Image (cartoon, rainbow, N blue to C red; front, top):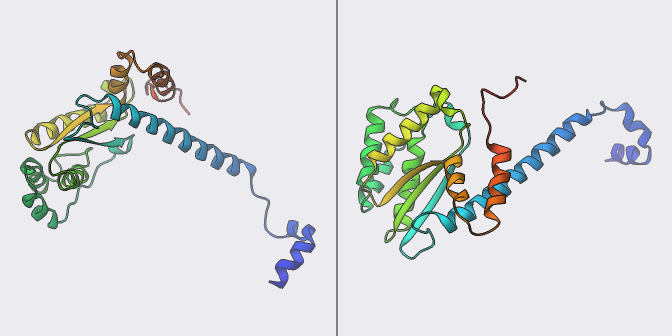
Length: 218
């Protein structure tokens, strides 16, 4: 405490303690913080649009929609471990049989899904089924991919796994729908109202619609 007071009244001594931090670190942290804020605002705007314009209307009585978003984390191999206690919960929740069978398939073939976190999605479906027992529910899986995704095996496998998962859980009370951001934005551009939607989509595309093959090397 005494030493801190001495440094307070003799600031010149601070220069002899440690090294001056590189200002570039502070600027980089600030840019990261601002980038997260911009992304959060974009997701909030996107969430409002999903809530207002998704087919079926998620705010209608008797209907619920939950949205989960993926950026590029699905490109890594996913570990979809689910505790055995979830089996009992799935078995006692009405109309979740397809999701229960999917969990059993995951345990029998852990490598069946390389990019999709099936375990996490099963947990989401269970939470929706128990939270909204009297509603038809949709679990909307929004994911980002580059404009030239078809040129890369990883993105093609990801889409194939999503299609397989959708077929596996069809017929259950918790529906599963996967949609890329680009396809969602394409649907928005076909709408003529509200008037701010077109400019919102343009800003999102300007920031996130990119082609990997055309990107300059760093």
